[in-house]
Image (tube, rainbow, N blue to C red; front, side, top):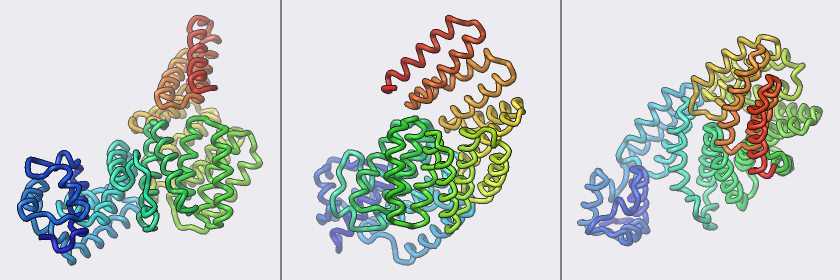
Length: 444
């Protein structure tokens, strides 16, 4: 018999989660779903049930009884620390292999805390490698294990600060990855749900970072009113906390929202505050990402500053290359450098670099759409207006699929203007109608 009822239930549930088995899949003639629920809740299992579970889970019965040996648990903690260090140093392939070896240990699930840490590390390493689908699958599974999306969190969920931080970290990474593959609807849904569920625990650095990640998804959707309200809420909360992490996160995307509003002075002020807050932290990846975002704002809203933006981007590229930045982070920086090439008059180089980045990262649909829009701008600068209109309309279709109606409508409208310039009135009318249709669907 199990000597520790609750401990035995935790072991069984952890092993089941590690193997991605539902209660239905683990049940059988001698083990009903109801009986499994009782065992996972701490009811004693019979020797026969333990044997049947051991066969189905492909692990020794002793593991079901007692979990990992203490010395093995200590070894795993050391191995996790090594993988964490490799990821922090930007060695994503090495970290991914180390995390994968740990996750493949059939007994790891008997320590759910260690399994979740390894699984999250593996997801982040996959993201850093540019393997967004794998990262999304792992993060989705982890979030469903810790906080099923269709369930309200019980009050006790907030009693363990470490578990709360882990829930937020998982939701934050999932929101970010979904945004990058272009599923803006899911990105906002995950971010909104996690943001509202975790707020009862009070504002924290991680909570504000989650809000800033959600804000980035709203920025991609072009929902300006929502962006303004959320940016204000996050900045007020960050100022109350007064910590560098909170201020960096709130000012970072707040600068983008201010730039979207045409308030260059406010955007510069928030950008400077974000950099000042970041100077108190040690995080080369975020330094590069922050610098690249501020440079991107310059290119978008102050194009005459393209030389200054290029210098910032080259510095950011060096910071990202020598850090734990993901392949997608670096690709965005390089795409902004291509934009700087276009503004400097080298449309051919801009089109070539943007097209190459879109081909290199096909799963990152948001990046692909941005790259195609840049290719269209470059083609227009090269007087290849017909090709520009076609590429831009294709980007509009991608943005519509991503549920970014504001940006999709703008892409179709610009394509229509290009076709009108060519004298293709029929094609131009269709494109304008498409722009209005997409806008109307979103309430624009």
